[in-house]
Every structure is written in structure tokens, then in C-alpha cells.
Image (tube, rainbow, N blue to C red; front, side, top):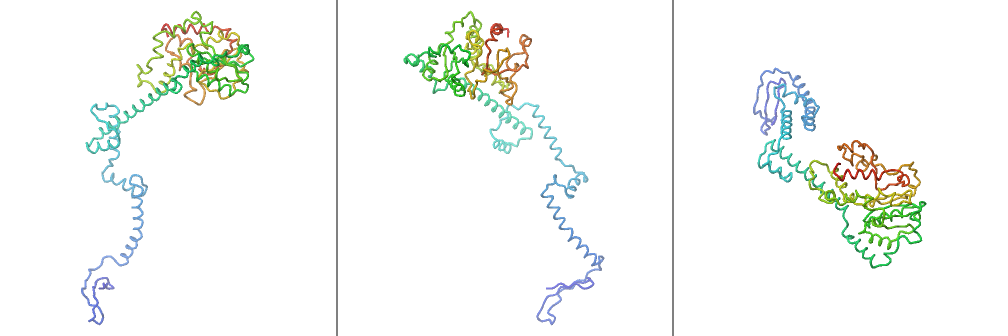
Length: 450
């Protein structure tokens, strides 16, 4: 079958091939076309222009698809953006966002309905939304309730973590819980555990100011052994070290046994109990005796540290500070002995006082070369440093400056210092009335005026 156009484009003939016809074709149909109003040249140019523009239309369509209607920069996108406005139709996305913000503000200011059941997981939330067909406001309330619940659980977990750390730090590990009892038994049954410390021939060195004298006041045998051993091992002159370890009456036998059976030669170690100091009498320390035995104070330090505490009104950091400040060791006489060092060691001029929670990692001999310029105490300040938790302590962190007596006598911005390692000039200390001032403040505290 063939299609023939006349040269004038006025008729169209449809022919079919045949074996009986000499020409091989039979005219099946002949169609006459009305007079043309568009010239062939015009039609040709039109088809040519369309063939040129179609690829660009395809490219623009692809750009719209790839870039997205709201995010593209092509001309077609511009038309899509302006078209609805020109035709009187407005995009509803802006109104939807404003309505959403309005709902969020209402949910923020309102109260969560008490009968609203919060899902336990995101999957359950999606399932509840599908099954119950919640509106946007109910959905927002559910999200708020889930987030607040999660925040409470995280906060409670943080406080529980701090409590566990506090108990772990202040408790004795189970494996060494009976260490003191075993060493006390050793003291009564083993003559080597009762040998004199130091030997008689070394007793004069206990008051020799050419030696480096360290003082450690503790009832923790294991902690004391760590402090002494680390100091001796880190020292470049261990033969110049003299340790004065002070403990209470119940721990004395165990403490003596440990250092008698585990000597730290060539250093010298002296073990003394509080009851062996003649100067420590009720007449000299009446306030400390009262503070240690007063029931209200003992309950504050030895009682439940969480009872009566409103955890919602405090931060984990403040709570940790309060736990640390309420450690029972702070009302122990051993903790207050540092204020009586000039009287307990009348023949010494300079000493280094160490806490039982330190580990010495370098030689401390240069401390005895420091000129304190007539001052009593040399210590490390704790208000300057990179560690914001440790090195941010000022007087305001330790004192209640809402009390007029404290506000009148102390500066809240005064830098605090670390008392884990202090070097004391006892000769300069004896020229002051520090002990009397200390007693006067303790009296104010004991009688409830602070």
C-alpha cells in the first residue's frame, strides 16, 4: 500500500499493488483536499522549529523533576511558583507551617492531659497514630510527654550514678573489708608486727629539720600505704623522707602492723594514734569534741544524703558537690588535726601535709626549697585551669554568703585552694592566732548561728 500526494497538495491517493495491473498498483481511494491556507514552506518551518525546541522542553522537564518544585531555579519552576498567584490560587504550605507553630505554642503553654497514655517507643507511637487517628495537637502533646519522660529518666539515672560513685568512693571493697581486723590480729600475735617504728636509733630524726617531713592523717590503712609508697618511689632522695602517720585508736594496731611488716626503706615511718598526743585534750579541742558528738551534726553527715533533697531544684553537678561536702570524714577529728600541727609537732619548722586520696607521681623535694615569704600555707589554687569542674572553686562554692557574718568577713571571689597537698611553715604559723580564729568559727557553727 502506498500513499501519494499530488504536487499541489490538493489530493491524496491510496494505492495497493496488484499482479493484474501493468503498473503494479490499483488506486483504492482518492481524496481531494480543500484549498490550503498554509503554505508548504510555512509548514516546513513550523516543523523545523518544533524539532529544535522539543529537546529543550525535555531538559526543562528533567530539571523540574531533579531539583524539586520548591527548590529549583529554572524558568518552568518560576512559572510554577507565580502561576497559582496569577490565577488566584495561594500555596497552603506557609499557612500549614504557621498553624503548626501555633499548635506547638499551645502545647508548650498547656498541661499534658492526665488521661493521655504515652507510648513506650516510636513504633508504638506510629501505631497509635494510625489506629486512633490523633489530631495534630494530641500528637504534639504525646511527643512532649515522651520527651519529658525521657528527660526525667536520664536525670534520675544521672543522680543514681552520682550516688553509686559516692558510695563506691567512701566504702571499703569487699575483698579487703577485714584488712584492718586481720592486721589487728597480727599485731596481737606477731612480734614483728609490734616492733617499734621507727627503731630507737632513728628516733632523733623525727625532729630533725634537715629531713623532709610529711604528715598523713587517716584511718584508711590501704590508702595510707599508697600515699607513703608512691611518695618514696617518686622521690630522688628517699633517704631524706620522714612520714608521720596519725590515725585513731581503733585503727592504730592495724596501721602499725602494716608498716612494720611492709617497710618502705630507706624512708622513716612513724605511726601515732590521736590518744598518744598529750596535747590533744578536751581542754584544747572542746569545740571539735562537741561537733563530733552532737546528734544533729552527726545525722547530717552520717544520715541519708538524699532524704529531704529536692532533685528537681538542683543540677547533678551541685548534687555531686553536696554529696562530697557531706562526707562523714569532715567531722572526724582526724580531718581537723591539720589546724593543730604547730602544737603536735613543736620541734618541726616546715612540713608537707598530704590527704589520703592522693598518689604522688614526681619528686616533692623541691617543695622544701620554696620561700613562703613569712606566709603559713603554700597550696595549689583551684580557681584557674582548663578543668572547669576541678579548677573553678572559689569561696562562694564553700560558704553560705547569704549569712551576714560570712558576707562581712569573707570575699566570695577569693580563690580556693586544694588541700590534698599543702606545705606549712610551722615557725610562721606559731606567730599567728589561726587556731583561736578557727575555734571561734566552729563555735558559731556549733550553736547554730551559721
